[in-house]
Amino acid sequence: MDAFLSTHEPLVRAAVFFMVLAAMAAAEVVSPRRRREIPRLLRWTNNLALVVLDTAILRLLFPVLAVGLAGIAQARGFGLFNMVEAPPWLAILASIVLLDLVVYLQHVLFHAVPALWRLHRVHHADLEIDVTTGLRFHPIEILLSMVIKLAAVAALGAPPVAVLLFEVILNGMAMFNHANVKLPGRVDRLLRLVLVTPDMHRVHHSIVPAETNSNFGFNLSWWDRLLGTYRPQPAAGHEGMTIGIELFRSLRELWLDRMLTQPFRGPASGHALDPGPQPGAAGRAAREGS
Image (cartoon, rainbow, N blue to C red; front, side, top):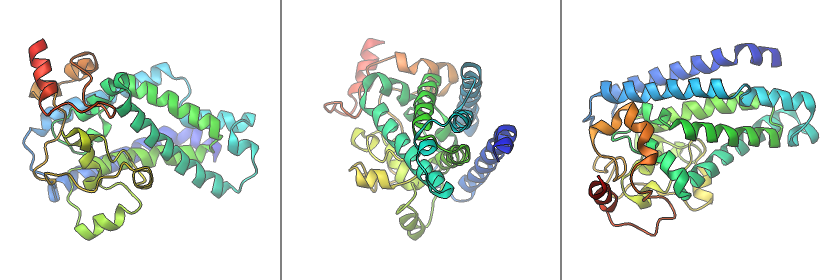
């Protein structure tokens, strides 16, 4: 199994990535939740260009990624599940659940710390939400996220197969729950008992700060419910809500060059610990400073 993972990991991840991307893109055409106002060509080319840039930077700067580090930890015997006897199935399941909790806590952190929010708001500055929004992150955030993930994998001693499964699940779920897809109400209610659905996560992309700073989960919905960050629906409804943040509202901000500079422009308002700016305050501050 380890030899298979080391040889075929990139192929497995790429295959699942493109299958989920294609499936969600098709579902968005067949059953859209919200009306599309911005040309897909503009958003998709720039969002996907950012994915390519992020991937290239990761591969350049990190000689070992999460699955590789899990293999090293296993070979050298460090990390919790390499030091504590546990059935393989339990180590795999527990690793996936605990890594999901780490991602939830990391997401909360990136909303709470102003400097980190500056990076993360690139993800929120998309003016519409669809499958490609789930892939849109600033390169510096991607690098910091990888550092956190590597630390968690090393501390847990997560089995390599668990890390691969987690990576595939997380990537697929990020595309699923950002998709502009309308699920039947009953299906959504049942799914969100365990998983983050598109309607649940879309609330997180509302322009209203109280809604932006809720529903932080990407995969399991438990963490938001257990830790008090769950918000079932947006106040304006899914068709009426405004997507994005106050600061970056022009179509020009959807271009790759502007996304890369967004962390360094304007105030850091709207983060989870912000005392509560009035609606429009960030946009006015940006205009006054320009």
